[in-house]
Image 1: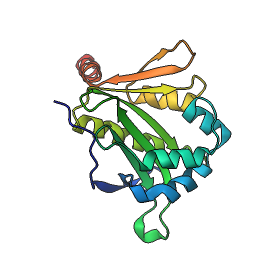
Image 2: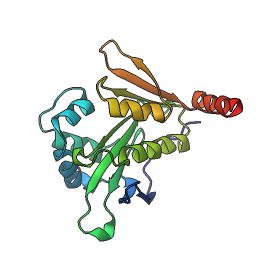
Image 3: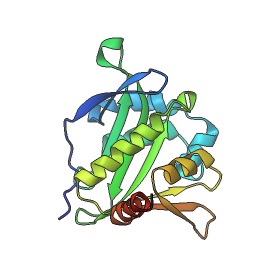
Length: 191
C-alpha cells in the first residue's frame, strides 16, 4: 500500500566529502525568499537542464512552485546552511511528485546552486529522496534528463537508474526498486 507524500518535520545534518555541513529538511511555505535567492544563482545551462528549455523569472516561478506543493502527492527536501551559522541559505533542492495519491510511481527533479557544483550535495539529496520514496512504499522513481547533462546522467547511473532515450532526444531514467534489489542480489551472489 502506497503512503502519500505527506510533509514531515524530519531533519538532520549531513557532512560532504570536503567537510561542508548542511541541514536537510523538508521545504516550508516560508522558504520563498531563500528559494528565490538559490535559484537566482542558476546559470543559463542549469536552467536549460532543469526545464529542458528556458523561462522568464525562473527564480520566482521555482520558488512559487516549491512553496505551494500538494502534500498528498509532492515532497521537496532542501539542503540549508546550519541554523546557528547566520541567515539560513538554501544550496540545493530535490523534489518528488506522484501523478495522483494512489500512484506507485513518482518523478524526481533536482537542482544544486550553480556556484556549488561538484561537492557531492546533489548525490546526497538524491539518496535522501530515494530513501523518502522507499519509506512511502513507492515502487518506481523516474526522471527526465537532458542528453547533454552528463553529470546528472552519471549520477543516475551510479544510483542504479536505467536509462532510455526519448523521441525528443532527452533521457528518461527509471529506478524500479524491486528490479534494483534483484540486480544487487545477483551481483552479490556472483561475487
